[in-house]
Each structure stands twice: as structure tokens, then as C-alpha cells.
Image (cartoon, rainbow, N blue to C red; front, side, top):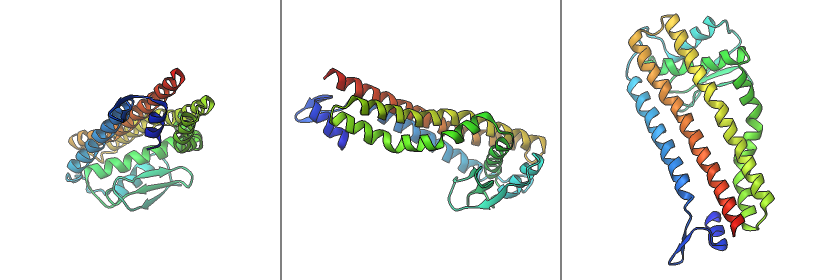
Length: 245
């Protein structure tokens, strides 16, 4: 609403009977469509292989314990948390948090998701560069994602170019975080599949299904990055449009 007011006040966009259309909204809509498609893809793929039982009969929690032991990791605690696909590894307290859809499930999807999170624990143990960088960027990325748009819009409303530039720079920090996240996630999946194959926890056909689950999950990060890049482009276009007014 604030952006629409700014567009009307400064005459950005095209007027149609008193209604001003902001063409940069198309970038935001495209980003939204990409994230929705990726989200639907991971949910569909997970649901499919969540119905396929792991032949070894391992639950997500049991698979996680085996993967950690195979990597020589004994200081990570496996926890059960609520939710669906809310699984994550927390390097701050060395905990592997597995959701309802993973912890006690013996499906191929659950085992692969659990192993993927173990991949992050292995990265932490080995001080994997992109993971270290991502952890370092967390505070700046949080500030950027929360303050970038308010600061930018304030700059638009009051014709303060320094604030517009500050908003763009802050948002760029959030984009950088998402960019660094990609190698972290792909590497974790690669480690997970390799361990599952080497230890024999999954057979060839099960690994094929697991690879599809992890690939679909990784594409959600790709879509999120693409959406953020489109939003960044939108900010730049809006700022340049204001300069021309």
C-alpha cells in the first residue's frame, strides 16, 4: 500500500482512470510464481516418496544417527521437533532437529531428508567454507531483509536518494546470503547421498527416489534466490525511475 501511494504521489507507472499500474510489480509476481512452483514441486515429490518405505526399515532418526557415526560425529544431539519439513541443523548448539514428517518415519523421503541435515553437521565439523561464510552473514542478512524495504520506501516518499541506496544495499545483503546458501545446500545433499550409498542404507532404486526428493528441495532455494534477484532489480528500477522524475 505504501509503494502504491508513492507511485501515485510521484507519478511512477501509468495511469488508467485514476489507477496507477506499477510495471515493476510484474517482477514481484514472477518471483512469487517461481517460489510457488518450487514449493509445489518439493511437496509433491516428498509426498510421493514418503509413501515408499525404506527397505532397511530405518526411521529418519535412526538413519541420522548412522550417518553421524559414519562421519565420526558424536557431539550432535538428534531432536524431534513439530511441523512438516521443518528439519534443520543448528550449529550453535550442535543439534539435528527432525520434524514430525521425518523423525519417526521409515520412508525413503524421511531418510534422505535426515541424511541431508547430517550433511550440514559434517560441513560444520569440517569448517566448510560456504557454511562458515553463511553463518557470518546471518546477522547482516536478517537486518537487510527486515529494514531494506521500509528504508527504501521512506527514501522514495521523501526523495532521499541516500536512503534509497541504503535500502538497495541492505536488500543486497539478503540476496548475498541466499546466493551463498546454494552451494551449502547442494553440497549437503551430495554428502548425504554418498553416505547413504556407501553404507548401504538405501538401494539403487531408493537412492534414485531420494535424489529426486533432495533435488526438488534444492530447487526451492534456487527459486528463492531468483525471486530475490527480481526484487532487487525492482528496487533498482524504482530508484532510477525516481531519479528521472
